[in-house]
Image 1 (cartoon, rainbow, N blue to C red):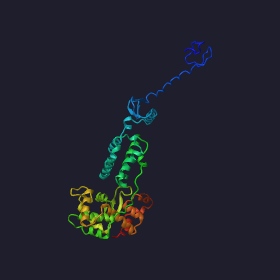
Image 2 (tube, rainbow, N blue to C red):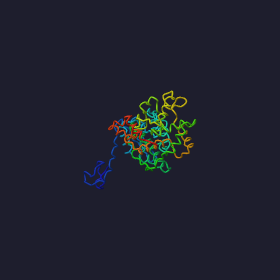
Image 3 (spheres, rainbow, N blue to C red):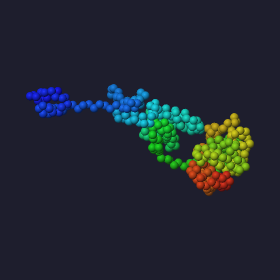
Image 4 (tube, rainbow, N blue to C red):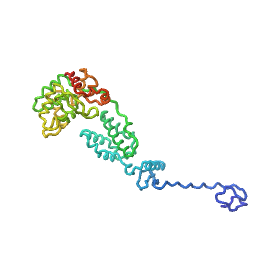
Length: 377
């Protein structure tokens, strides 16, 4: 370029700030455009899509897989760096909630769950429909909380919300194991407060009504099942899952249970009012199950529940379901003065697992039988 002084006008370097001949200050040269730094080879790239978009920047892996679109180039670079750091396949990072549920459900441990638990997870998944098509790594605690809040608005119970949170927790745990996310957002969810509704228990007159129908040709077996539940505090499915090999008539106890670690394989005393019932079942079984169906299979819980409703209708008893019998038994144990640790052991409450490590005698069938004999209806 030439010097701007009219009397000089000599050729000077393009980036000169002053003329080397006359000393005249020259206009500031336009700053040189800094060359954009290239990403290291094999680390992917970031480019911008044309047009007006909310997320125009694309993160591309070294294998030319699209990692996602982002609002700023910085977010795209961070996503690429995170991807390279954990070396997680891009297809896995793009996993949606529906994909995660399908893969979690395909695990062998899901097949080992009871039919009721499987159905519970399927119902919870249906309630999470708004999340199904969204990528897991984009979901945060607020997204999961929105599903819970909608359930509360519809009047669903805390128990339903707890089951929903359990599904979210299972999905998050699976995603963490796959390096898709690094946090279990289900642990941050807020559930509605418990209502503290008092459980219904049976009166002595109602128990007598049930007992009087043990010889009924249609509902007799159901009445017998009800009496055993009342004198053991077992859950309905625990009794239906009992095998003959786990019944020790001579020692007067059964061994079984489910749901919690403390509830599994626990000692359940056999009291006099139900001894003959269980002895008859043992003689009449003819297969591995204590109370088999006519086909020799395990009795279906839902069929038993249907017959139980018919029995309650026959006895003119309202507001009662099979689990009410467990509540009645536990209330009667406390009322009759059984030791707290004995009650925990017999019912299989989860907080007994710690107690059992200190008090070995509470797993002794003789001790539990003596405690149970305090219970009188």
